Image 1 (cartoon, protein in one colour):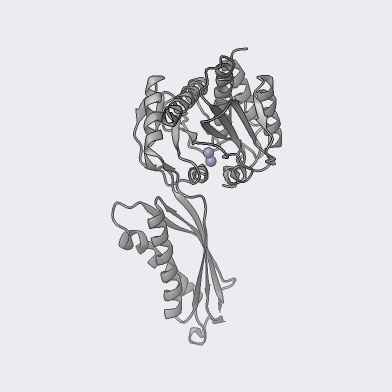
Image 2 (cartoon, rainbow, N blue to C red):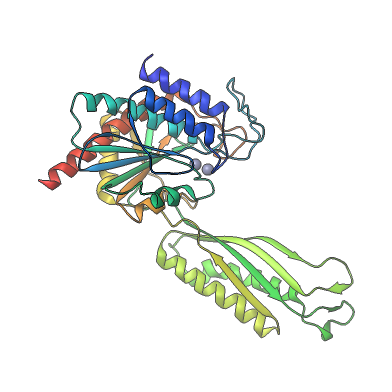
Amino acid sequence: MTIADTIQTLFLELHQHPELSNHEFETTKRIREYLQKAGIRILELGAKTGVIAEVGSGSPVVALRADIDALPIEEQAACSYRSQNSQVMHACGHDVHTSILMGAAYLLKAQEQEQNLPGTVRFLFQPAEENFSGALELIEVGALDGVDVVLGLHNNPNLTVNQMTSCAGPFSANVDRIEITITGVGAHAAKPETGVDPIVIGAQIVTAIQTIVSRTLAGLEPAVVSITKFLSGNTWNVIPETVEMEGTVRTLTPEVRAKVKAQLTNIVENIASAMGGKGELRWFDGPPSVINVPEWVDLAKTVAQQVGYEVVDIEPQLGGEDFAHYLHHVPGAFLNIGSQSEYALHHPKFQINRDMIMPAANYWYELAQQVLTVLKNNQS
Ligand SMILES: [Zn+2]
Ligand SMILES: [Zn+2]
Protein backbone atom coordinates (compact mmCIF):
# COMPACT_ATOMS: atom_id res chain seq x y z
CA MET A 1 0.00 0.00 0.00
CA THR A 2 1.34 3.48 -0.84
CA ILE A 3 1.78 6.06 1.92
CA ALA A 4 -1.11 8.04 0.41
CA ASP A 5 -3.41 5.00 0.66
CA THR A 6 -2.21 4.19 4.18
CA ILE A 7 -3.02 7.62 5.56
CA GLN A 8 -6.37 7.79 3.75
CA THR A 9 -7.21 4.51 5.48
CA LEU A 10 -6.04 5.86 8.82
CA PHE A 11 -8.19 8.96 8.31
CA LEU A 12 -11.32 6.86 7.64
CA GLU A 13 -10.65 4.70 10.71
CA LEU A 14 -10.11 7.71 12.95
CA HIS A 15 -13.17 9.50 11.61
CA GLN A 16 -15.40 6.50 12.28
CA HIS A 17 -14.02 5.97 15.79
CA PRO A 18 -13.71 9.42 17.38
CA GLU A 19 -12.98 9.78 21.09
CA LEU A 20 -13.40 12.67 23.51
CA SER A 21 -10.56 14.66 25.11
CA ASN A 22 -8.48 12.64 27.59
CA HIS A 23 -10.28 9.44 26.53
CA GLU A 24 -8.42 8.80 23.26
CA PHE A 25 -7.47 5.23 24.22
CA GLU A 26 -8.37 3.42 20.97
CA THR A 27 -6.96 6.33 18.97
CA THR A 28 -3.69 6.08 20.88
CA LYS A 29 -3.55 2.35 20.23
CA ARG A 30 -4.21 2.87 16.53
CA ILE A 31 -1.50 5.54 16.21
CA ARG A 32 1.00 3.28 17.96
CA GLU A 33 0.17 0.40 15.60
CA TYR A 34 0.67 2.57 12.52
CA LEU A 35 4.00 3.85 13.85
CA GLN A 36 5.18 0.37 14.78
CA LYS A 37 4.24 -0.98 11.34
CA ALA A 38 6.72 1.49 9.84
CA GLY A 39 9.37 0.80 12.48
CA ILE A 40 9.15 4.35 13.87
CA ARG A 41 10.42 4.54 17.45
CA ILE A 42 7.98 5.53 20.17
CA LEU A 43 9.16 7.46 23.23
CA GLU A 44 7.58 6.03 26.38
CA LEU A 45 7.19 9.21 28.41
CA GLY A 46 4.10 8.11 30.33
CA ALA A 47 1.33 10.29 28.90
CA LYS A 48 -2.09 8.73 29.64
CA THR A 49 -3.23 9.17 26.04
CA GLY A 50 -1.41 10.47 22.97
CA VAL A 51 1.86 9.25 21.46
CA ILE A 52 5.32 10.77 21.10
CA ALA A 53 7.61 9.31 18.45
CA GLU A 54 10.83 10.15 16.65
CA VAL A 55 12.91 9.56 13.54
CA GLY A 56 16.51 10.56 12.91
CA SER A 57 19.09 11.18 15.61
CA GLY A 58 20.94 13.85 17.50
CA SER A 59 20.58 17.62 17.46
CA PRO A 60 18.91 19.74 16.16
CA VAL A 61 15.37 18.58 16.96
CA VAL A 62 12.18 19.82 15.31
CA ALA A 63 8.79 18.77 16.74
CA LEU A 64 5.64 18.47 14.64
CA ARG A 65 2.35 18.40 16.51
CA ALA A 66 -1.10 17.01 15.65
CA ASP A 67 -4.08 16.97 18.01
CA ILE A 68 -6.08 13.71 18.13
CA ASP A 69 -9.30 14.32 20.11
CA ALA A 70 -12.92 14.73 18.97
CA LEU A 71 -16.02 16.62 20.17
CA PRO A 72 -19.32 15.71 21.88
CA ILE A 73 -21.41 16.23 18.71
CA GLU A 74 -23.77 13.83 16.88
CA GLU A 75 -22.47 13.74 13.32
CA GLN A 76 -24.83 14.78 10.53
CA ALA A 77 -22.34 14.86 7.65
CA ALA A 78 -23.45 13.23 4.43
CA CYS A 79 -20.50 10.87 4.13
CA SER A 80 -20.15 7.10 3.90
CA TYR A 81 -17.60 7.01 6.74
CA ARG A 82 -19.71 8.69 9.41
CA SER A 83 -18.84 8.41 13.12
CA GLN A 84 -19.86 5.10 14.66
CA ASN A 85 -19.65 6.49 18.17
CA SER A 86 -22.89 8.09 19.24
CA GLN A 87 -22.58 11.74 20.31
CA VAL A 88 -18.90 11.93 19.38
CA MET A 89 -17.53 13.39 16.17
CA HIS A 90 -14.31 14.60 14.62
CA ALA A 91 -15.89 17.97 13.88
CA CYS A 92 -12.66 19.94 14.19
CA GLY A 93 -10.65 17.78 11.78
CA HIS A 94 -8.15 16.46 14.33
CA ASP A 95 -8.48 13.13 12.49
CA VAL A 96 -7.02 14.79 9.42
CA HIS A 97 -4.22 16.44 11.45
CA THR A 98 -3.31 13.01 12.84
CA SER A 99 -3.31 11.42 9.37
CA ILE A 100 -1.16 14.22 7.94
CA LEU A 101 1.37 13.82 10.73
CA MET A 102 1.43 10.05 10.21
CA GLY A 103 2.10 10.60 6.51
CA ALA A 104 4.98 12.94 7.33
CA ALA A 105 6.36 10.38 9.79
CA TYR A 106 6.30 7.65 7.14
CA LEU A 107 8.02 9.90 4.58
CA LEU A 108 10.63 11.05 7.10
CA LYS A 109 11.27 7.47 8.19
CA ALA A 110 12.40 6.73 4.62
CA GLN A 111 14.79 9.68 4.81
CA GLU A 112 16.17 8.33 8.09
CA GLN A 113 16.87 5.00 6.41
CA GLU A 114 18.70 6.83 3.62
CA GLN A 115 20.63 8.69 6.36
CA ASN A 116 19.48 11.98 4.86
CA LEU A 117 18.14 13.60 8.02
CA PRO A 118 20.31 16.33 9.56
CA GLY A 119 18.90 15.80 13.07
CA THR A 120 15.76 14.50 14.74
CA VAL A 121 12.08 14.96 13.95
CA ARG A 122 9.76 14.37 16.90
CA PHE A 123 6.05 13.69 16.37
CA LEU A 124 3.63 14.90 19.03
CA PHE A 125 0.27 13.15 18.69
CA GLN A 126 -1.37 15.29 21.36
CA PRO A 127 -4.54 14.42 23.29
CA ALA A 128 -7.15 16.82 24.66
CA GLU A 129 -6.79 19.98 22.60
CA GLU A 130 -10.50 20.79 22.81
CA ASN A 131 -10.40 21.18 26.60
CA PHE A 132 -6.98 22.87 26.42
CA SER A 133 -5.25 20.35 28.71
CA GLY A 134 -3.28 18.16 26.28
CA ALA A 135 -0.36 20.42 25.38
CA LEU A 136 0.32 21.09 29.07
CA GLU A 137 0.22 17.35 29.76
CA LEU A 138 2.74 16.56 27.03
CA ILE A 139 5.04 19.38 28.16
CA GLU A 140 4.79 18.01 31.69
CA VAL A 141 6.03 14.54 30.64
CA GLY A 142 8.96 16.06 28.76
CA ALA A 143 7.75 16.05 25.15
CA LEU A 144 9.62 19.30 24.46
CA ASP A 145 12.92 18.29 26.07
CA GLY A 146 15.71 18.99 23.60
CA VAL A 147 13.34 20.49 21.01
CA ASP A 148 14.65 23.54 19.11
CA VAL A 149 11.58 24.43 17.02
CA VAL A 150 7.95 23.33 17.23
CA LEU A 151 5.43 23.46 14.38
CA GLY A 152 1.68 22.86 14.34
CA LEU A 153 -1.14 23.10 11.84
CA HIS A 154 -4.91 23.28 11.79
CA ASN A 155 -7.19 22.80 8.85
CA ASN A 156 -9.18 25.84 7.77
CA PRO A 157 -12.58 25.15 6.14
CA ASN A 158 -12.63 28.58 4.50
CA LEU A 159 -9.54 27.89 2.40
CA THR A 160 -9.30 25.62 -0.63
CA VAL A 161 -7.10 22.52 -0.37
CA ASN A 162 -4.22 24.21 -2.17
CA GLN A 163 -4.15 27.26 0.14
CA MET A 164 -1.99 27.83 3.21
CA THR A 165 -1.88 30.74 5.64
CA SER A 166 -0.06 31.93 8.73
CA CYS A 167 1.14 35.20 10.20
CA ALA A 168 3.96 36.42 12.41
CA GLY A 169 3.02 37.47 15.95
CA PRO A 170 -0.42 36.67 17.44
CA PHE A 171 -2.36 34.07 15.45
CA SER A 172 -5.06 33.03 17.95
CA ALA A 173 -6.54 34.56 21.10
CA ASN A 174 -5.94 34.40 24.82
CA VAL A 175 -9.09 32.49 25.79
CA ASP A 176 -10.12 33.32 29.34
CA ARG A 177 -13.27 32.44 31.23
CA ILE A 178 -14.92 34.70 33.81
CA GLU A 179 -17.45 34.24 36.56
CA ILE A 180 -19.11 37.15 38.34
CA THR A 181 -21.13 37.03 41.55
CA ILE A 182 -23.22 40.02 42.63
CA THR A 183 -24.46 39.87 46.20
CA GLY A 184 -27.27 42.14 47.32
CA VAL A 185 -29.89 41.87 50.04
CA GLY A 186 -33.08 39.96 49.34
CA ALA A 187 -36.41 41.64 49.95
CA HIS A 188 -40.15 41.57 49.26
CA ALA A 189 -40.69 42.75 45.69
CA ALA A 190 -43.14 45.37 46.99
CA LYS A 191 -40.49 46.80 49.37
CA PRO A 192 -37.29 47.24 47.33
CA GLU A 193 -36.14 49.97 49.73
CA THR A 194 -35.54 47.33 52.40
CA GLY A 195 -33.11 45.32 50.24
CA VAL A 196 -30.33 45.71 47.66
CA ASP A 197 -31.45 44.44 44.26
CA PRO A 198 -28.61 42.41 42.65
CA ILE A 199 -30.47 42.19 39.30
CA VAL A 200 -30.40 45.97 38.84
CA ILE A 201 -26.70 46.01 39.81
CA GLY A 202 -26.00 43.12 37.43
CA ALA A 203 -27.78 44.89 34.57
CA GLN A 204 -25.67 48.03 35.14
CA ILE A 205 -22.53 45.89 35.16
CA VAL A 206 -23.40 44.09 31.93
CA THR A 207 -24.01 47.45 30.26
CA ALA A 208 -20.79 48.98 31.61
CA ILE A 209 -18.79 45.95 30.43
CA GLN A 210 -19.71 46.93 26.87
CA THR A 211 -17.53 50.03 27.27
CA ILE A 212 -14.33 48.06 27.94
CA VAL A 213 -13.60 47.41 24.28
CA SER A 214 -15.13 50.63 22.93
CA ARG A 215 -13.75 53.09 25.54
CA THR A 216 -10.63 51.65 27.19
CA LEU A 217 -8.88 49.93 24.28
CA ALA A 218 -7.40 51.59 21.21
CA GLY A 219 -9.46 51.30 18.05
CA LEU A 220 -7.15 48.78 16.40
CA GLU A 221 -6.70 46.53 19.44
CA PRO A 222 -8.98 43.54 18.90
CA ALA A 223 -10.78 42.12 21.94
CA VAL A 224 -14.11 40.53 22.79
CA VAL A 225 -15.88 40.46 26.16
CA SER A 226 -19.06 38.38 26.14
CA ILE A 227 -21.41 37.71 29.04
CA THR A 228 -23.04 34.39 28.17
CA LYS A 229 -24.93 33.50 31.32
CA PHE A 230 -26.99 35.60 33.78
CA LEU A 231 -28.86 33.68 36.46
CA SER A 232 -30.94 35.10 39.31
CA GLY A 233 -34.17 34.75 41.21
CA ASN A 234 -36.82 32.04 41.26
CA THR A 235 -40.17 33.75 41.47
CA TRP A 236 -42.09 36.95 40.63
CA ASN A 237 -42.54 38.64 43.97
CA VAL A 238 -39.15 38.25 45.67
CA ILE A 239 -36.03 40.33 45.08
CA PRO A 240 -33.28 37.70 45.12
CA GLU A 241 -30.04 37.77 47.03
CA THR A 242 -27.54 37.09 44.22
CA VAL A 243 -26.78 37.14 40.52
CA GLU A 244 -24.38 34.64 38.93
CA MET A 245 -22.83 35.46 35.55
CA GLU A 246 -20.38 33.72 33.24
CA GLY A 247 -18.62 34.79 30.10
CA THR A 248 -15.42 34.87 28.11
CA VAL A 249 -12.69 37.38 27.28
CA ARG A 250 -10.70 37.05 24.03
CA THR A 251 -7.58 39.14 23.45
CA LEU A 252 -4.44 38.84 21.35
CA THR A 253 -1.64 40.31 23.45
CA PRO A 254 -0.61 40.02 27.12
CA GLU A 255 -0.93 43.81 27.50
CA VAL A 256 -4.54 43.97 26.32
CA ARG A 257 -5.35 40.86 28.36
CA ALA A 258 -4.09 42.58 31.53
CA LYS A 259 -5.89 45.83 30.71
CA VAL A 260 -9.25 44.10 30.18
CA LYS A 261 -8.83 42.11 33.40
CA ALA A 262 -8.10 45.28 35.40
CA GLN A 263 -11.01 47.24 33.94
CA LEU A 264 -13.42 44.33 34.37
CA THR A 265 -12.45 44.08 38.03
CA ASN A 266 -13.00 47.83 38.45
CA ILE A 267 -16.44 47.73 36.91
CA VAL A 268 -17.66 44.69 38.80
CA GLU A 269 -16.39 45.73 42.23
CA ASN A 270 -17.05 49.47 42.05
CA ILE A 271 -20.46 49.52 40.39
CA ALA A 272 -21.68 46.91 42.86
CA SER A 273 -20.33 48.81 45.84
CA ALA A 274 -21.65 52.17 44.58
CA MET A 275 -25.11 50.59 44.55
CA GLY A 276 -24.77 49.04 48.01
CA GLY A 277 -23.95 45.50 46.98
CA LYS A 278 -20.83 43.42 46.52
CA GLY A 279 -19.34 42.36 43.21
CA GLU A 280 -16.74 39.63 42.80
CA LEU A 281 -14.93 38.69 39.60
CA ARG A 282 -13.28 35.26 39.25
CA TRP A 283 -10.93 35.02 36.28
CA PHE A 284 -9.74 31.67 34.86
CA ASP A 285 -6.77 31.84 32.52
CA GLY A 286 -7.31 29.71 29.41
CA PRO A 287 -4.66 29.03 26.79
CA PRO A 288 -2.65 32.09 25.88
CA SER A 289 -2.46 33.53 22.39
CA VAL A 290 -0.40 31.61 19.80
CA ILE A 291 2.54 33.95 19.14
CA ASN A 292 4.31 32.89 15.94
CA VAL A 293 8.01 33.59 15.49
CA PRO A 294 8.58 35.55 12.21
CA GLU A 295 11.63 33.49 11.08
CA TRP A 296 9.69 30.20 11.18
CA VAL A 297 6.51 31.68 9.67
CA ASP A 298 8.60 32.96 6.75
CA LEU A 299 10.19 29.56 6.21
CA ALA A 300 6.80 27.81 6.47
CA LYS A 301 5.39 30.14 3.79
CA THR A 302 8.42 29.74 1.50
CA VAL A 303 8.29 25.95 1.70
CA ALA A 304 4.51 26.01 1.17
CA GLN A 305 5.06 27.86 -2.09
CA GLN A 306 7.82 25.47 -3.11
CA VAL A 307 5.50 22.47 -2.76
CA GLY A 308 2.68 24.17 -4.66
CA TYR A 309 0.48 25.91 -2.07
CA GLU A 310 -0.95 29.35 -2.68
CA VAL A 311 -0.04 31.41 0.40
CA VAL A 312 -2.89 33.70 1.47
CA ASP A 313 -3.15 36.30 4.24
CA ILE A 314 -5.74 36.15 7.00
CA GLU A 315 -6.38 38.21 10.13
CA PRO A 316 -5.56 36.64 13.53
CA GLN A 317 -8.52 34.63 14.89
CA LEU A 318 -10.19 35.13 18.27
CA GLY A 319 -10.57 31.39 18.75
CA GLY A 320 -8.29 29.45 21.11
CA GLU A 321 -5.53 26.90 20.41
CA ASP A 322 -3.53 25.16 23.10
CA PHE A 323 -0.50 24.93 20.78
CA ALA A 324 0.26 28.32 22.38
CA HIS A 325 1.65 26.51 25.42
CA TYR A 326 4.45 24.95 23.35
CA LEU A 327 5.43 28.36 22.02
CA HIS A 328 5.94 29.57 25.58
CA HIS A 329 8.84 27.13 25.85
CA VAL A 330 10.19 26.77 22.31
CA PRO A 331 10.04 29.07 19.24
CA GLY A 332 8.03 27.97 16.26
CA ALA A 333 4.99 28.57 14.12
CA PHE A 334 1.37 27.54 13.77
CA LEU A 335 -0.33 27.59 10.40
CA ASN A 336 -3.53 26.74 8.55
CA ILE A 337 -4.08 24.56 5.49
CA GLY A 338 -7.35 24.59 3.55
CA SER A 339 -9.85 21.77 4.16
CA GLN A 340 -12.54 23.32 1.96
CA SER A 341 -15.55 22.37 4.07
CA GLU A 342 -18.97 23.81 3.32
CA TYR A 343 -19.61 23.84 7.07
CA ALA A 344 -17.57 25.44 9.86
CA LEU A 345 -15.36 23.75 12.46
CA HIS A 346 -17.48 22.20 15.26
CA HIS A 347 -20.55 22.01 12.98
CA PRO A 348 -22.33 18.60 12.91
CA LYS A 349 -22.05 18.62 9.09
CA PHE A 350 -18.36 19.59 9.00
CA GLN A 351 -16.59 17.48 6.38
CA ILE A 352 -13.08 17.98 5.03
CA ASN A 353 -12.04 17.54 1.42
CA ARG A 354 -9.83 14.44 1.61
CA ASP A 355 -7.66 15.68 -1.23
CA MET A 356 -5.87 17.82 1.34
CA ILE A 357 -4.28 14.91 3.23
CA MET A 358 -1.33 13.73 1.13
CA PRO A 359 -0.15 17.17 -0.09
CA ALA A 360 -0.18 18.39 3.52
CA ALA A 361 1.83 15.35 4.66
CA ASN A 362 4.32 16.03 1.93
CA TYR A 363 4.51 19.69 2.94
CA TRP A 364 5.12 18.78 6.60
CA TYR A 365 7.86 16.37 5.47
CA GLU A 366 9.54 19.03 3.36
CA LEU A 367 9.22 21.75 6.01
CA ALA A 368 10.62 19.59 8.83
CA GLN A 369 13.75 18.88 6.78
CA GLN A 370 14.27 22.51 5.84
CA VAL A 371 13.90 23.58 9.48
CA LEU A 372 16.55 21.03 10.46
CA THR A 373 18.86 22.27 7.72
CA VAL A 374 18.52 25.90 8.87
CA LEU A 375 19.13 24.89 12.50
CA LYS A 376 22.13 22.78 11.50
CA ASN A 377 23.64 25.68 9.55
CA ASN A 378 23.09 27.98 12.54
CA GLN A 379 25.00 25.50 14.74
CA SER A 380 28.08 25.48 12.56
ZN1 LIG B 1 -11.96 22.49 17.85
ZN1 LIG C 1 -9.23 21.95 16.35
